[in-house]
Length: 304
Ligand code: FO1
Image 1 (cartoon, protein in one colour):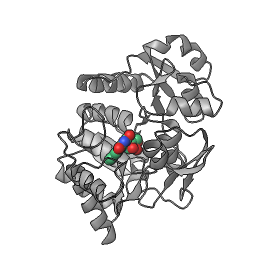
Image 2: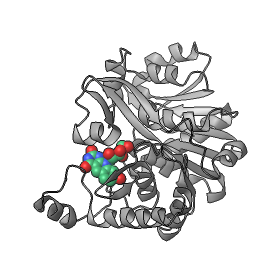
Image 3: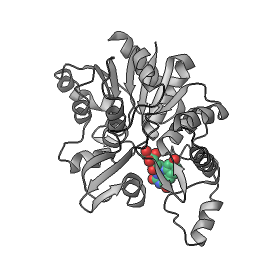
Image 4: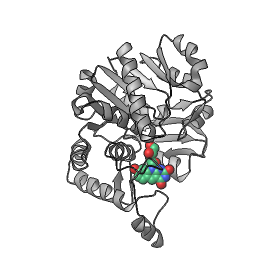
């Protein structure tokens, strides 16, 4: 079964990793959000691409899910000593990724070519693609004005009240090379458990229409997220945060929806949306959980 997965940060990367443990390289492509990208300390940083790549390469920090395992922080602490910004924690190994990506981009290489070369260097056999080679910037409209995504998410720790989102550049951004083919050749599309507002919507706005069965895994379990501000965002936008809200978020494109055992009581409401549902354990606390959930999702897709 050929799958194209749409993923953002940590939660999405975990399911993508589970799928990569089951599907051979020719049967899985991961399309990653680049709306979180930004320039910082003169470096071009792609947090979601790096989170997905590090996770599939087995290099990711197991505690945070982002950045590298066994990291050291000498460079950023010396930047701080010199009076530079240290709010965005760049580890020493991680900085090599940003230095080399920035160097190649300045030479005119595309983000998708760089990602392909980095995946090879990290021993990743599956295809990981940025959603676009053109810049797209997620801007968060808040009660304190509009903030760039990392400013909102990391620097301000998601405190400002969210009023809406804007994906700067998304209208002009063409899907990266290989994205359209990956969507066309897939038997099904899996929307990984990433933030619908700021991780998945940017991808959906770049790829526009999807003419394949689509299955999403809810990032909200029992009204909470495992990680990240999706619940807070739904609440501040006046939407009751639940797996049902996520199913509604994607309802125009969804064929199937995977929700956690804790949300069994919501299943009928989602069935009423004419969306097939699978109720299973969607928590991925350990490495083995990733392949288990991926297996459940693939089996569910096979039954649609
Ligand atoms: N997230 C944080 O909450 N604090 C950080 O200091 C931080 C640093 C960081 C460095 C590199 C990287 O690839 C990701 C990093 N993240 C950090 C996560 C980042 O904010 C991403 O946007 C998340 O992965 C959510 O998509």
